[in-house]
Length: 343
Image (cartoon, rainbow, N blue to C red):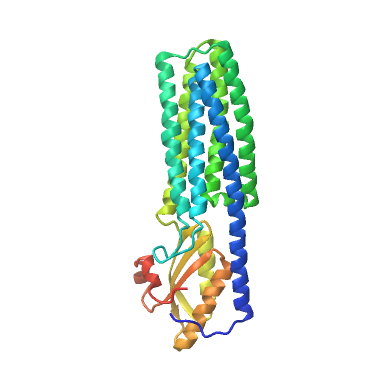
């Protein structure tokens, strides 16, 4: 089913082209919005990291120093996310024929590692040190620390609000399919909780004189960061190693294929996310007998366009004709389904 179609441009062809142009335009618009969100979070975290570090050194507060490490980790991670947004937009080339969409997942994985190493581990270290040696804040140190944390809570809350609003504009939970946006929401949400924990630890230390409260706050912040890093890392890993489309989306594609009058049966269907808005679809199908080669080619082009209209992110579509049993086809690697008839 390979070869160029001899069809002349039709309304169907023009609609197909317009749909893909609209899809690319929406993708670029979402990328710009995500970039602004990441830049807002980066600016807030850089300012807050400096304020927390200075306040923590003045106040000798382990909880405040843990929060400073948290903000530094978030700042570096947002630099990773900016790299992901830029590099994932590169067009396909000979070495990477499916494009660079998975760069987004790779840099998100690095961000998760950064949260774990820089944020979580340093917070645990500060908590253990405070338990072993205590902490000696002065009254002015308490005041400085609490003011810094109050400002940080306001800044982190505003950054989180923007990220959540953008996710809502992109479909709520569905908007969090973007690993960059998902990471920003996770980081800002964790930062808000971490600041609240640090505030509680400092306040209890000031009231009771017991450093164990701040130590406990540092350990709790560390545990929170490790948990978030694990969740983000697991999601990025699944996407990097080749995650299939959602079952509902795969079901729509299968139903569309089965509805074609020229298809007797769908022997196998494989999907894989190649990027945020890029999906590979490979199907092994059995056509009705009696179709000549030119008719098969026309049918293949029409089916691919139907899939692309229904699922705009399906920008790599491969169809392969077979008369083998479904059990044998299902045992084959998805890579084999592109042997003939790639879109």
